[in-house]
Image (tube, rainbow, N blue to C red; front, side, top):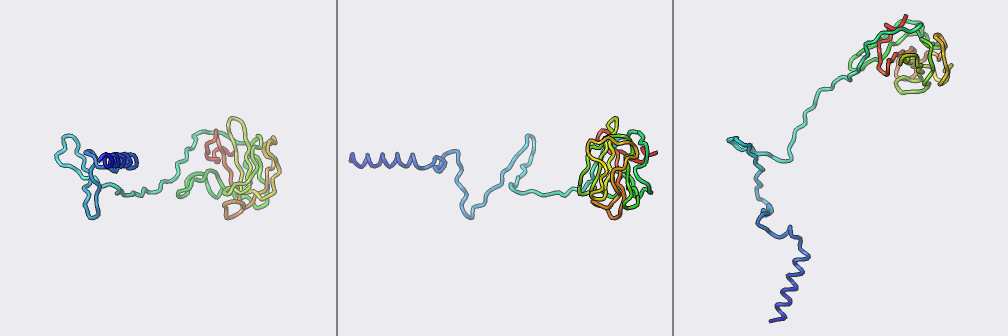
Length: 202
C-alpha cells in the first residue's frame, strides 16, 4: 500500500510540473469550442442602451478616397530680376496643369542657344535630376534662388561656388529630362518656396 501511494504521489508531481496550467480547466476559463460548435459573437451594451449590438470580429471594409492634387504653398511676394534668362516666348506658365503643379515657366529658346544668369549671384548647383535633366541653380541676395533646367549634357559654362553677373552664360538650351522639345525651364524660389517667375522678369 505504501508503494502505491508513493507511485501516485510521484505521478501527480510529474503531471503538475509538466502540464501547463492553462491546459487544465478552471472556474474562470470557458471550455474551448469544438468542431461544429457555433461561437456567439461578443456583445457590448452601452449604459442606457436598450438593445445590445453584436460585434463581429475580424471584419472590415476599405473606403477608397478620391485622389487629391498635391498642395503647393506659393509665396505671395514681389521682387525683380535684372534680365530674362533666355530669348523666346513662354510656352507653359506657372501653376496647375491638371493634377501637376508647374513650378516655373518654359521659355522656348532655340536649341543650343545659351541661357544666362537672370541676376548676380553664386552658383550653388550644377547637376542632373530626372525631371529637370541637366540643371543649374544660382543663389541671389535675400533668400532668392533661380533654377535653369533641360540643358545640353556637358554644356555647363560655370561651376559650383562661382560668382556670376546678370547675363553670365550658364549652359546651352537642350532637351534633357522630362521634356518634348528644346526649351529652358526657369524657376524662382524665395526662402525655398516657388513663386511665379513672370512678375519678376523685366
